[in-house]
Length: 364
Image 1: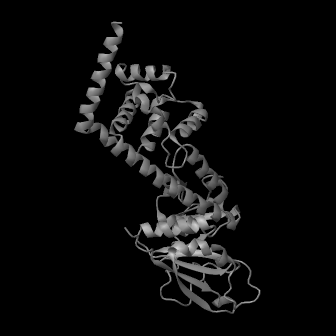
Image 2: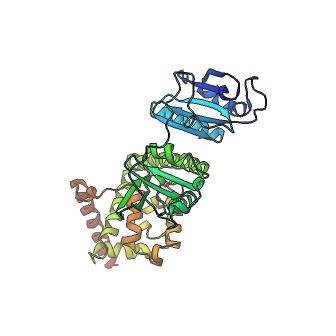
Image 3: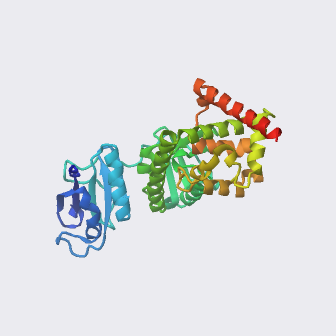
C-alpha cells in the first residue's frame, strides 16, 4: 500500500522591503521542517546586512502565526491541514513587521493579512487581574482581547500566570473565560475557545506573544491526546466508562442521599489503593488505567487530583463541590446523561449489585 504524497506549501522569501526580491518556492510539506534553519538564515543572496529571519505561517482564513521552532512549524502546518486550510509560509528579516502588519505586495496565493478585530465601543478601563488602570500599563505588555463586539484589555504576564494555574487545575486554556466591567460597570466576557482570538490577539502584538504561541501549541496537542484517550475508553473499555459515570453520579448525590452513594464513597476512602476517592471499590483492576488518562491540559488525572487536593480553592475540599466538577470536566460529562434511560437502567443494576454484595458480606 503506497502513501499519498503530502501536498506542497508556498514558501515565500520576502525581502522586497529591504532591497531584494520576493522569491516563491513550492516545497513539499514533509521537508519544510528540515529546512527550518535554512529559512532562518537565507537571504537568497540578494540582500546585504540581513541577519536572521522570522518565519510566519498563515492561510486564506487566518492571521499569520509566527513560528519559533521546527516543532511549532510542523504543528501549525498540521493544524491547518486538519482544517483543510492550505498554508503559506513567509520568511522575512527578523527586524521587519509581520505580514499581518505589513501585507505582502506580491503573490496572489498568500493569505489575507488579518490583524486584531476592529475597535468595539464596549471596553474595560481596569485590568481584571491587576485592578490597575489600563492607561497605567505599559502598552507592549497589554493584550487587547476582542471578539468584534467587546474588547477586554489585560496585562499579558498576569494572563499567562492565570492560564498556567488553570492548567494545573485540569482546565484547558480553551475553556477559559475572561470577565471585566465596561465603562458603565456592566460585565463583559470573552471566551478562549475561538481560534481567531488566539491568532489575532493572544499570539501576536505584545511582549508575551511567544508564551501564548507555546501555550496554544501545547494546549492543542493536549486536547487532541485527551480526546483520543476518552474515545479509547468509551469504545474499547466500555465497562470502565460506565464505572466513571456511576462514580460521578455518586459524587453528585452525596449529601442528598445517605444510602448507597455515601456508603460506597466511604468504602472508597478506606480503600488502601484509593487515590482521592478513585478506588478499586468503583474501578477494580482498571483503577490505574483511569488515573493514567492524560488530561485536557497534559497532566494525567492522577497528577491533576494531587494538585487540586493539595491546593484546594478556599482551603476546603468537598467531594460534591471540588471533586465532582473536576470529574465532570475531565471526562466531558453532560448533565443530560443522568436522565438517559440506558444510564438509569445500568445505574440501577450497579446499585442492586452493591446491595447484594453488602448483604453477602454481612452474613460472613
